[in-house]
Length: 182
Image 1 (cartoon, rainbow, N blue to C red):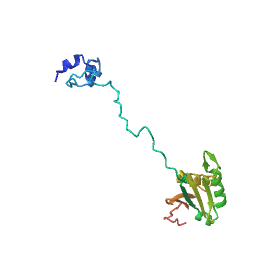
Image 2 (cartoon, one colour):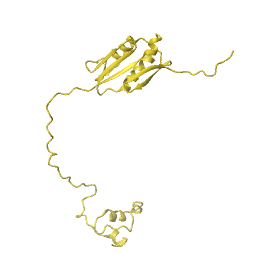
Image 3 (cartoon, one colour):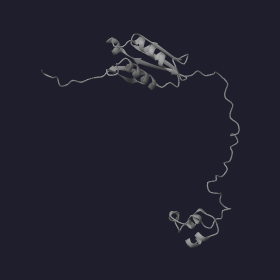
Image 4 (tube, rainbow, N blue to C red):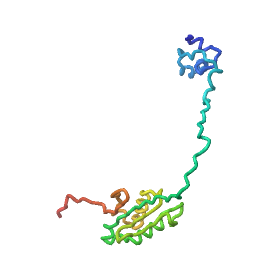
């Protein structure tokens, strides 16, 4: 190993030798006792240069796709259960269904459901939305909350996920444990 004074003045160009000859605070960043062993710049690639990666024999051609069925898109089925507000005649399922049909965006356009999305009210209290993937469940929650706000019901109802594919509208539970005596 060469002493630090020789490494700083050596004619080869290693990063340590260059940094050791720099004036100012950069000089303190490099350890003066570190020695690169006298490797010349012709032996090492330039700083930041990468060695060429060997090509694999199959990287030049992609495998042919299997020709068969076109493959159907997966359908997701979501249910919004509104039985509590419908039972109390606070919410009308037909207007909520119409709101969803008009508000759901497909391809960036609202009301353009086509074959991608179908909105159907099952019985008198449930709405089923079937959509091609990708269709986030959270989007239905957003639209439901928007409808509740528009109908001024947001202060009384909230939307809760009861399972993986179902939302339910419920009243806020207000516990009045301390009864007032007049």
